[in-house]
Figure 1 (tube, each protein chain N blue to C red):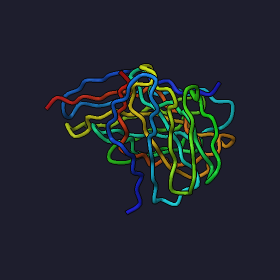
Figure 2: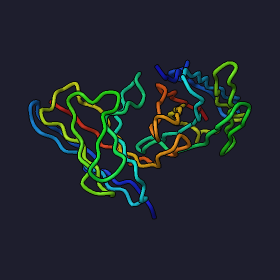
Figure 3: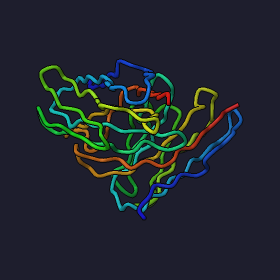
Amino acid sequence: GDSVTQTEGQVALSEEDFLTIHCNYSASGYPALFWYVQYPGEGPQFLFRASRDKEKGSSRGFEATYDKGTTSFHLRKASVQESDSAVYYCALGLNYNQGKLIFGQGTKLSIKP
Amino acid sequence: EAAVTQSPRNKVAVTGGKVTLSCNQTNNHNNMYWYRQDTGHGLRLIHYSYGAGSTEKGDIPDGYKASRPSQENFSLILELATPSQTSVYFCASGERSSQNTLYFGAGTRLSVL
């Protein structure tokens, strides 16, 4: 079935470190791919999406490139800040799902000042 | 400002009791969703709705019912609550598209004792 896998359950970095959170997907169709961010005490919020192969999505210094060949959509940021501490979710949406999203397990990012 | 509002924010229930979680959206979206969030599982879809009067089963519907009496309101009902339903529940609204961006409420923390 359709699924999203995030390799890292937790990531701990220092300020100004480079961030990579890995996301791989399995889907029978051609999905749209998303990143959502959840700050403590809040609901998840949309970060950005990409809809076709080689498209790059970006927001707030974060970016990810849709790679159909490796079925991946890895999240990257060049220099993290303490305010980036949050849980990050990768998700996919498919045409026949009519708006439903399938989420990965989430990655908790902790940044030490 | 358009929003998704959940009530209550916190709930303690007894095993075997009935619990109703409520959600209201002012986004004028057709679709609404109920997810639960558990460590290691991410966000899993319980029920969803395409509009007033409609409810559909998600990926983990057992033990839950849903009700969509109007465009704005979507409830999740636990007729006989069990400790395994202790979790954080999120309501979201969105459109019926694979490009769908979901807008989440702040969540309801439910403890079933």
